[in-house]
Image (tube, rainbow, N blue to C red; front, side):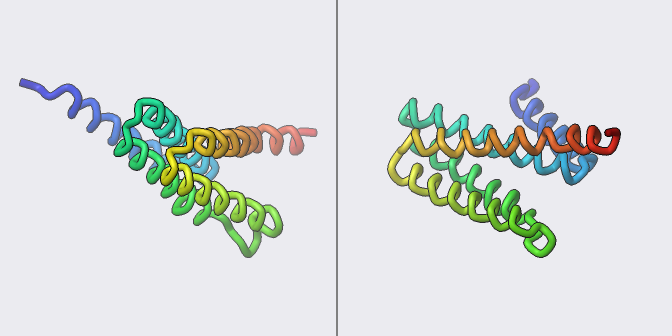
Amino acid sequence: MFNRPRGANAYSQVSLETAVQTADPHQLILMLYDGALLALAEAAVAIEQKDIPKRAQSISRAIAIIHDGLHASLDMESGGELATRLAALYDYMVERLTQANATNNAAAVQEVSGLLRTLREAWAEMPRQQAAATAG
């Protein structure tokens, strides 16, 4: 009578949309990192299972998040050298993932995942560092 998976997916989508609408810009970037990392984890599993369509879909989603989300959110005018370096790093990630998709390269997916995890951890730590600097 009820389609539980469809209902759960709909609930999950509404929950995500609500989170995006109520998030501050800092949280939105964390959500982008999380989304890209999730897509790459799915791609790694797909590579292991030799599921080419799932691999392609997951890597494409990660590329879109990195390029259309993270790279596009950079403020190149006021971001200075940091924004320039992040832009170059995001371009590198997109290039590696494009290669990974074409060659079924799990190592490249893991490399980009590691880079994204490092950036995500640093981004998550920023509010604490700012609070400590303000209090100190």
